[in-house]
Each structure stands twice: as C-alpha cells, then as structure tokens.
Image (cartoon, rainbow, N blue to C red; front, side, top):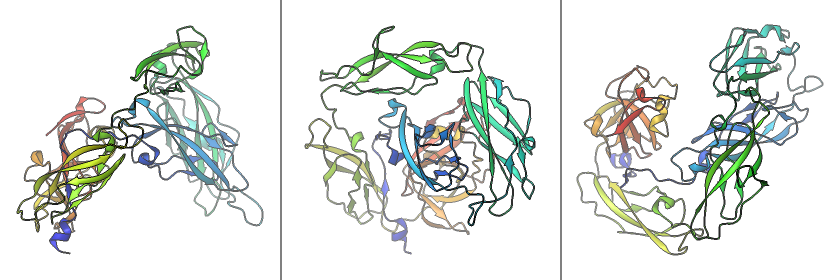
Length: 500
C-alpha cells in the first residue's frame, strides 16, 4: 500500500470547540446483544450511547424483570428506557423509550427432542430480604440450600440484577450477600445455578429485596427528571422513583390528562403538579405527596434551523484537493463552495468550506437554505504517518471525557501508536497511526470519534482519584486528534480538567 493510500482519505477539524447537538434517537443508542434465554431471563443490550434506566414488557408471562418459561419459541418485545446523554438536543427529556424484540427459546425438559435436560433444580424458595439503606448487608445466604444438583455437582451461581442502583449482589462460592445503596423500595433480583455438563438445564431463584429508609419519601427522593409538554398540550410524564397517580394544573387542584395547546408563537413555561405514591421502604410508604415540575411548552412558530441541527458529518478533503460532500443529519446538502482546492501543498493545510443546506420541514423557512461553514484539514500528498510514539488504552474508550473516572476499566496505556504530534499537550489537529508488531506506522488509527487515555510511555497504572493528572485525546475515524484534555479524577465522580 502506498503512502497516499495510507493517508487517504481525509481529515476533519471543527471551527467551534463545542460538539454539535443532534437529537438522541434509538438508532443513535444502537442497542445490540439483547437476548431472552430459556429461563426467561433478559440479557440487557449494550449501547453505543446512553445507559439503560429500566425496562418493561406487556407480553404475557412478564413479571419482576423476567418472563416465565415457555414450551414453544416465543417472540418477546421489551421497551428499554434509556438515559439520554447530556450532549444531545433532547437531553431535557431525560429518557427515551426504545423497543427491542428477541425470541425466547422453548424450555422442554422431556420428550423426544428436549431443549435441555437434567441440571440443577430449585429447592424451596429464598426468603424475602429486608435491608436498611446506606450500604448495609443481609446475613449471608447459603445458595446451596436453595438449589439441588442434577447428575453432576453445581459448578457455580450467577447473579442477575436489573437494579444496580438499588442493591448490589456479591457471590463467593455458594454464599450470596446483598448490599443496599441509598434508595428505598422493593425490587426482585435473581440467582441462576448451573453445572458444566453439556446441554443441561439451569435453575433460577427469585429474591424479593426491600430496602428501608428511615426518612420519609419526599420530592427530592422522587427525583423528577425529564418529561415534556408538546405544543398541542400532550403530557409526557417525567422519570422518577414512585408512581404518579394524578397530574394537576394547580397545587391541590383537580386531575388533568393534558393541558391547553399553546396558541402563542413563542414557547411558554407550564408548571404541573404530580401526585406520587411513596414506595415501600420509606416511613410514609403508601401515602401521597405532591411534587411540581416546570416544562417549556413550544409555541406555534417553528424553531429556526441551525448548523447544529444539520449536524454535518463525513465532510473531508482528499489530498488531491477534491471535497467529499458527506451528509447532514437534518436537511439536505444542496451544494458547497469552493468546489475543490489545489493539491500544490507540502504541509497539511486547513481549508474553509461552506455547505449550502436545504432547510427541512418542521423548521422556520422550510425549503429555504442555510450556509454552514466547516474547517477541514487537507492532507499534503505523500505526508508521513508520524514518527513519535505514544501509548493508548484500548480496553475502554468513552463518548465523554468524564466517563474515565467512572468506567471501572484498568485503562492500561499499552497499545503503541505513532503521531505527527511532537508534544502530548499540543496534539490537537495532529494525526494518530496504528502500528505493527515492530512499532512501524501502518495506517491511520480509526478512533471512531471516541476519547482515549494516552501517555508517552507504557503506563499500567490504573486511573483513580489518587493517580494525578492524565491526558485524553479525542480521535476521529480518520485518525485526527480533534480534542486534547488534561484530566484528574480527584474532582469528584466525573473528575475535572481542562481542554488544552
């Protein structure tokens, strides 16, 4: 492969330091790996963006986060409530519901063609557990007392916990310990027993857990987040702890199901009052409290279309000087100027390109045009891939610089890359190249637009509040360092730092 091909196709560099704010959708969340097994246990999907808050299903047999077993393969539909990341235009809604389908296999333990046979079985039921909030634990639960082995010994036990912010599960050998967090309520967790024989069945036990809180349930504990009121007056309830039994337009007023449409051209604030039943585990469980939240109700005038709405992506300049048009998330790219650049350059050169966007319906001046200018980096022909060695962590990479203080990954900086940057602190707009086993640069590193921890030497030290400053590069899919940070996890949960 020639150097030109190795450098191709192109590089990106944005004119503003802030990222565009597209609308968060189920497609962007990109949930993969959702499954339902023979026992009806749900395997939650992994997401490219966002995190799962909770899930539910209206299918028959669904209860407390799992399905009953079935004798014939059954299609299951689960609605996952996903927390919207802060850097999306609809983050004020807090959550987004996304539906996924999977086939639950039949569990047939006898007959001519059983789906599984033998294996562990349940022995009576694990008693309900009650714990005080704030890190308290249950007495150790001997799981061997609640499962019976099949023809072979039980090889182990697997926790299934859909409520990790409510209670934590720890299994050592055959001993289960439950540890409370700071949220009261009642939820169900599960334990699965298995052996190592081929095609044997597993067994699952449910455990109802109550976490009690000495304080009364109040609006702070309810934690209302998100929700919405449309211009037509349709209400989407906020996400919260507890159950909303009534919506009111005024404190102590009558129940409503919607509000009047906003006939004004501009948005208006509307305050709603929610009657919420305190969940079990609190001193006032079962009682009702009233909590308010103010929403911005859109007016009749369509919003102005901006370059952030267009969210241009994939635009670039080849080393020949020709321009790749790329795409816009909303609207259509009608044209761009200039049409090309000279390739008579010897160093990578920043170029400004103006893209003419046709405004889509739903925005003011739909059908008209908006000019959006981006700064793109035209690579010089035959330019090298860089000679300076750096080391990045590839066991985890995030969509936000604050993710690394919460990732739980080892973040060992051991993967060698080469860069045109001669200093780790001044690397913005320089390139990163992957290397072969001999440490030679082979091709531009496809960073996917994610953030990576980087160092100038092989560093196996974990990232923690005590590890001091470390460096983060955001690397585009074309190997360009678009952002550069000095970060420190001592600043709290998300850490703190600054862009260099």
